[in-house]
Length: 56
Image (cartoon, rainbow, N blue to C red; front, side, top):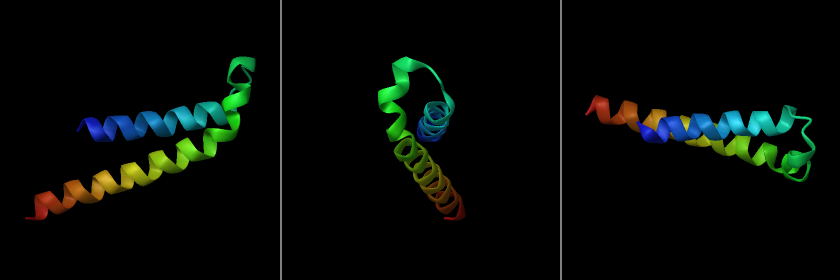
C-alpha cells in the first residue's frame, strides 16, 4: 500500500515541477518528465501486481 502512495507522490511532484514558476525549482524543472514517467510506470506496476495477487 505504501508503494501506491509513493508512486502517486512521485507523479504529483513531477507535475508540480512542470507547472511551478518558483525560481528555487528552476534547475530541477528539466527532471519533471522523469518523475512523471517514473510515477506512472510505478503506479501501473503496483496495480498490476496487486491485481495478480488477488487473482491467486
